[in-house]
Length: 345
Image 1 (cartoon, rainbow, N blue to C red):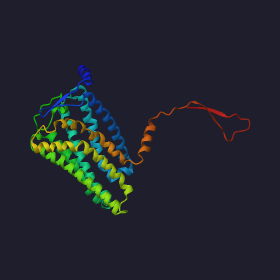
Image 2 (image 1 turned 135 degrees about the vertical axis):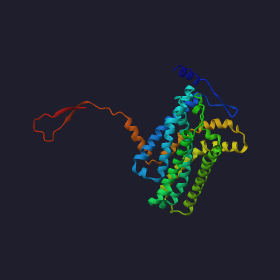
Image 3 (image 1 turned 90 degrees about the horizontal axis):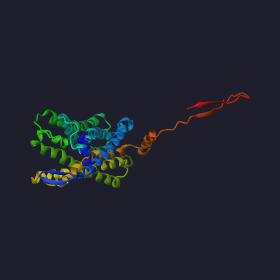
Image 4 (image 1 turned 90 degrees about the vertical axis):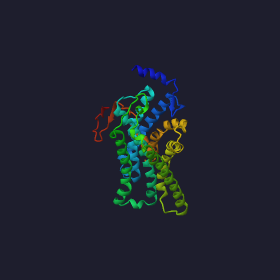
């Protein structure tokens, strides 16, 4: 524990410098990063459990087609909040990896990669599916169409990436050197030494960005057009909340995800590995807020949110139990009979 005590003193004073691509970049102080992550992770975890509870146990919400993408995304994101971020926090505080086992390092990198690639794809699919739910909802009334155009795409998006990165991190044999003083133990699969890096950049980063941007821009255009030109064709009171909730989730990716993809594309085109190094360090740090803010983007799907929140808060309050005599009056009391008293806790 001597290492823990010495590093705890470092937290209060040191501003570290990260060497990335041969460029020295000043980072946010350790104490700032630690508390930002800790507070954000705790709040995000509470929100995730709250939203998942109602989406899974409320019959109406569970049956809603728009909820299924969010349920899958929240479950995957919850793994990142429980397993990925705590290991990052420990590394920030102590300067070393918590559990120094190669398998844990692989699992740590695996969870981070899966959550970071699946969530944008799910949001891209939700952006496309929102067109169907708002403008062609009747097509999903038949069970055959729901399976084909709703359940299978969600399963493919999540299942493909889970199987892909399971193969990359746990099945493909690689000779790795683990450095337990670095985040993720300095581990990366040998697959990334091949052209797979380019495939991942364009299939996950660029493709997701293009789909999210295109489907949401066209959704806004269709919403405005139908509202003012074809009034009465769409139930706007019903679908307005769905549209605004999705746009809030999308804005999270616009702010914390898209800029990193743009930097990656510029590096690939120009061949300059140090392109945008200073932004890349800060962008990589704040990219965790995709995971932190995603549950708050989903909370808008819960109806009567204020009422449900008050119920939970009231359940935490301790009700005082008064102990004392209470008079019990017998309705068929005889004349001259004294009333009974009982001590009731």
